[in-house]
Image (cartoon, rainbow, N blue to C red; front, top):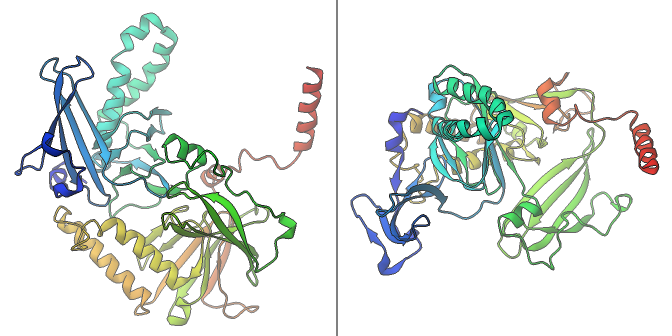
Length: 466
């Protein structure tokens, strides 16, 4: 995404989507900008706040706010989500490799955390932005460098520690620091780093995650104080869980944070292992979701499963994609990263349908009336996405042959073998050694599985002596 494309990727939305402010609001019909008098927090005189509702392709509607005081000349800009808090939080990770990546659009809410992972620094929550990766990096650079002279006198140790960081940020601004990695983590799900059709799992990742009760409290959407706060509280012991029986557990709805129930059921998959299916349906807000969790010990190696889909029978095969599993298909040009869809126990057709629906909702369903993604989408991108979805539709309807590969570092994924217990000629399974990056992401490098009893005894002895 280049800087030249940015002006074409903004589209005003009808005034009806704004909260009505009565006669206080003035609107410019040509630009869609609305303005209202508001108090300046710097000099306490009246200033002017300008509001513009924008539709961001691949994302959602946002409100740009710009405040200016004619008395003290104080200025401030911010961006707010025009929609509600999303059902899950979202974390984006991008490896910036060139100028095009540097100019990707970024939407930062005031509760998000932007990190330059390569330098180990972050821009904390508290300030929102509608900018580019370059714009956010520049703001971090200016924030750190502006007070260096003062730190040199008052905090020389901090000054010395920041010198190499600021130098590295300067190299990045001069286009000498490629590649580097940034991340954007937002528990509301309303922050975003723009994707492109050329993205792969190696340079761009998005992970959706359920919020904790503490995060809901911070966002002001926690349930009543008397509500159940411990997610997953149940009155049954693990030893009492019977295969095929449905159990209800107290939980907190991730959509509206009101108390509710999640249903769980243990299922034994032949020639594989036991899995637990979780299903949530909220009677208050209508939120519905389902997920699959696998158990057992951590395997020594990961597993890669390749399936050749040649007919409708293959489309109806059962498939279990765990939340640590990545999916890839060269014929469909599809790559699903770990954590994107969560754990799913469905059919091949069902999984492809979920992938299509989720992507289509992000790319094209920006405009409910046309479903075409709006006039602001670049024509070349629109053609690429249209071809992509047409190809995916053909695969789902059984009109084309393709190959899908499941790669799971925890070996918790499964594709139904129609020839079991004999080998299925359309399925290839291989074990592989996990990479250091996979070990790190799974937390296995810090996990101690041997000798921990001795460590506990040593800690107990220290506590007793003290």
